[in-house]
Amino acid sequence: MNVSRSFVIRHSSFNRKGSALIAVFWMIAVMGMVIFATTKMLAADTRSARVMRDRMFAKRNAEMGLEVGRHPQIELYDPLLNHSDEDGGSYTVQITTEEARFNINALLLHSDGSILKRIFTYWGVKPEVTSHLVDALKDWVDADDNVSLNGAEKHEYEKMGLKGLPYNRPFKDLDEMLLVRGMDGLDAFRPDWREWFTVYGDGRIDLNEARPDFIAVLANVPMERLTPLITYRNGRDGAPHTMDDQKLVSAVQVAQMLGVFQPQIVQELQQWSQFTGPIRRIESTGGFNTMQRKLVLITQNNLTLWRGEVPVQ
Image (cartoon, rainbow, N blue to C red; front, side, top):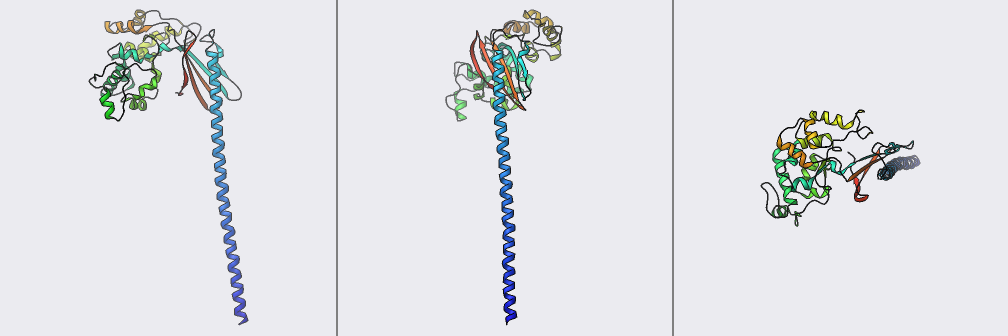
């Protein structure tokens, strides 16, 4: 009887010790998970704080570059337009004219849309999409409610659940173009489309500052035909925005360099070309570690027309 009772007591004691040991292991596991989760959370917070710091410093550097670039006596080739420091900060400033881009309002209101169609075709947009998009853009900027062949006026936007559109006036800024039917698809297909357009200037393109592909589209020639013109424009050192740059002076000169003799294209060059745009565009890309941010300032006669941040391409 005593032996049986003693066995029961020892068995009960073993059960209690076993349960306590399991509880200890369980607590250790729980504490381990808590510590692991806390460590991950702190690491995520640290990364987030680092990203926020880098973004702030990158913007600060971009603002420094913008102030350097806006100085009226700064030259396009001034070494002050590029800066980097040992702490990982930097800025790079590019100064050009806003007229180096296509004025979207002028292309829609003062032409038959052929140049805009050439731009979309150059990008690889399908012909039927190009046709619908150009007509929708035209309907947005014209003053009437007449629908173009493939365009969109009030009724078409209302069917999409959008009231009060289109505005029937020229675009005030490029982001407004995203409201036009079909522009969301173009934005996804060609995210850098804003680099091609402006809403400032009289519509004539500064051929001394325009990108080679812009000139190729305007003159409707393949890119390889641009070599003589770009070589001439860059001067003896072959680099743009240096002291030996040479200036183009006339549409006839440009046509001859490109080997363009079709009367219609020559006429378009004369209509849409200029060689010293009065609107200044300053782009400052600030960096800190791996973070980059770009600020743009557009001025005319020292007056600010637009200032803001754009995506870094």
